[in-house]
Structures are given as structure tokens and as C-alpha cells.
Amino acid sequence: MCDSCKRTFTLQDIHEQLSKDKNRCLVIINGLVCDLTDFVDEHPGGGDIIIRNNGKDVTSAFQCLHSRKTRFRVNDWAIGTFVDSLSELSSHNGIYKQ
Image (cartoon, rainbow, N blue to C red):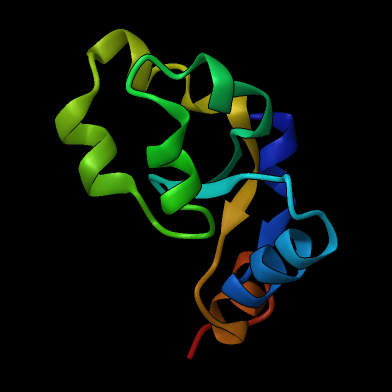
């Protein structure tokens, strides 16, 4: 696991981050929260697609549309792990899972 992946985010956490900084671009890929803010202008498919999917889980589209080489870059963009509920967050921290 990448060092930055030790931090956990719920969907609410992601939306709070985005509301604090309107220029930030965060997406979920393979259970990782990825910061694509600095990549928007470089994206070969155009930055609009990243902006339209800001704050969303894009795993399925990402897997279908990107090369194996690009899929390996996910860890470079990862800033944490996505958990979709408080019970999963507790489990991730070793407390319990509902």
C-alpha cells in the first residue's frame, strides 16, 4: 500500500475537500482517492472529462478507457483510500465492521 493510502476518505470527506477548493479535482479509482488537480490540463482526453466526474467513482470508465501503463499510475495520484461508510472506516482502522 502506498504511504498516502493510509489516510481514509468518505464521500462526505471528498465533497468537503472539493467545497474548500473549487479548483481541486478528486476522483475515486479502484478504491483509492486520487488527486488529479495538476493533471487536468495534461489529460490526453481533455480536462473536461475529469472536471465532469469530479468527486465521483470513475473506476469502471478508467479501467475500460486507459492502457495498462496508465492504470499503473493510479498510485502516483493516490492521496488516500475510499471508504463508503463509517462502519467500513471503523473496520479499516481495526475496530469493527457492520
